[in-house]
Image (cartoon, rainbow, N blue to C red):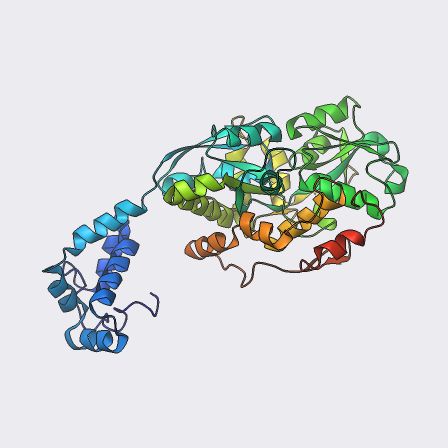
Length: 453
């Protein structure tokens, strides 16, 4: 219990009794309340009542020490029925809407959103969520904007693009949680095993899932660092992840920077090999995210909090390597990823065949950390600016704070036993080049290959 709880000093094993008078000890009181789901609400109500009646802390502490918590609450209850107050508080905190639709693309980046359904995390937090498999990112965006979905699995740049009006009309959007970090790769056709040097890729056709995606920005960054202009030396086209392996097999493309399990499925089918994992470009980069409109957040705050907490809870479970095989079995079926369990397991456990005759062990090939670093958002916007997707002056820090809701996530991370960072921003390196989020325009200007003016 917090040191701010006025009952801390009064509740002790020696005193006996509890605040409601129905249990032998305060521990029994809390245990019973926890079973009924009222522990937090009851404690908050009790604390608020005592603070209102005795606003001066010394007087409040002295009173509680003299008479004990149970006597104090019994006296107060004569004038204010605490049970009714607690029930009213609990009613107020319940989700305004329990039946929800959340769209997802069938890739391992959506693991927390998907697994929260079969593994009971949504139900645990009082929600009945239908997770809806969706064909592509443009469909995800449109169905969410049209309110067919309450929230969605999105690429982490998408809420920024929607808010900024890049590719659509500007609509305030939020990204309160990162779904996964790492979890992508550059995969090439097996016919290109002799072309491991990116300088040999001129004329190649590559696929990425969407224009506003980490995949697009990381592919562009990677080839540009090797002297290849992504707009003139190669072709980059958007193809939905479920269609990428078929396009590679049909020789429509030479490779892709894709989310998993697409890369591993190409290896499994014998049509591609993993050239480089995205973590080797930028370790612990964001990939996909849980996103919702600003309207959903503000108009149904309890539903939003319950949904976000369920996803953070699932993310905490997915972050533990010992749970990965169980998760793979839960999300592999046709209604979710529609992949062989072996493929999903290789991605989630990080022990995998690379298509070049090697079995690699990279435990954090994909990992899960929900914290939406604002500096991630700033980096994404620098790449939007670099490649001409946004123009003019950009309020990098302001937009990052508006869209990436780090404060909400930090609070709910604590409630599920995770430790959030002390700040919302940090520096990091992408292919050895350090990024300082306080100097975004300087960073954009530093690149030799860019579209920005």
